[in-house]
Image: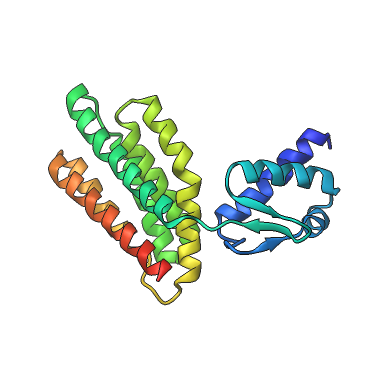
Length: 214
């Protein structure tokens, strides 16, 4: 395997573990152990770790390994707020531009999230919930809005997965019912109700984050 390919493989492997919550904040990773786990030398691991440091996921500890960084509480709340702003702005732009929501796609994403909820698959629940959210934003036909959402996607997923791991006794999967309300409001073109449901979803996400930091 070429050197660049090994760096990419190591980068995506470590990053995905962090985003999925398999490597929780506060965990210390060993480059030697990662190299052995992936069957490669430390050189591509070190390059991958450096890239993840730049993205804010990791922090090198002198002679002690690599730390998975905490998600700043304020950053988490700001992320939730920005996603709410993108979704509500999309609804307004759909009205102004007289474009339309892809109801078939939104309905399918909602169905998959409901299936994941019934199966107790939290990772799939989060993935389909974020895809539903992106579908709402995409209706505005604004590529910059979609780029902003994409830049927040993995941090949002990491926050959700970490919170799920750290609060096993708390109720989860609440966004499924809220997304059902959002979908039904959009389907009937009751955009005021859709924005109200989005605000409720945002408040639920913020409350869940607060519980995770208590």
